[in-house]
Length: 462
Image 1 (cartoon, rainbow, N blue to C red):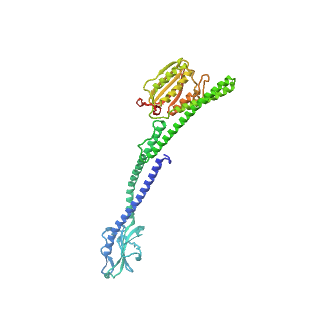
Image 2: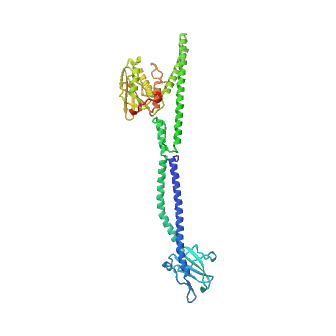
Image 3: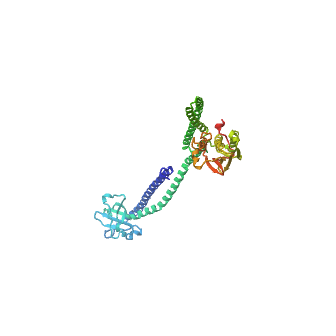
């Protein structure tokens, strides 16, 4: 898939959106989990802080002490990650948990702390960072009415570790969700673009003549496009039909003036103006060739997916006509035309093609002309052969050129095979030549069609 592919662009956009959504989800969920962990830690520390404050007292010597420290044994283990500290201000002692060992936490200044609990992050023992909960406390008169700053802390690495473990578990899950979303996007794009693929196939069928129009059955978003294409095809067919009619009218309109010119050429000959008469006849013959060619092209029908022709019947009818001509009477005819061989071609176009091929065969045959039809898989072939001198292989392409004549000793316009080639092109058929066993064969291969759907072209029926 290239970047110009609509499927590639949609998939690329979907993947980009999925990645952005997953990144946002990962960041948002991690932030929410960190906030949840910190709230949970706050609740735990707040309980410890209440226990520490409640335990502040003086011993018999009047020294400040904490008589009932938190029961968590980690406060007694050096560098365990659980710490508490009390500072009596302004000049009182500093009380701290055994876990701090000989380290003293540098608490925020008294001006930043009031009776409410405050969070902060400060340096801890052994290069660690502490997550600290601190509160200012006014001591009772029994304790001298002093003010104390009480703080409880936990190693911030534990909070970060919990968040990291959550992110480690979350990442594979989000990756799995991302893969599912990308696959869903791929499936959605594939299904969503399927109507365009169907339209492409139907357009190909229209181009080859297997269908007439796109028709309906498309989604609401695609149906207007299909309707516009069908309308465009209708307009094209109307234009082609008008062009065919104009070509036919033009060719017919030239017939009478050309006959008049030929009559004038005969009069000039009778008067002895042979040179001028010959030039006029040459020009008239050229114009007649063009007029005949345009008439034949105008008669060629546009491909119709529902039309078909019985090859045997059409070929037999052409042979009967040719057998009644003066040249046809002198020849031996061999017909091998099985019944129910059907080709996807307009019967009139098939008759025109077989007629031109047979006329050429009659013109060059010595004694025999043969017409055979056969069907192989999806192809119907019509073979017209004669026992004439044949044509060298290097001249086969030239035979299809309009007006080209390889043998000027026999009458003709040089348009027969060119007309056949036009018919072959219109109906997606094939034309081939072969010289073998003193016979020159021309084979016309046409897409086959089931016998059950034989119909004449409706336009021709009308």
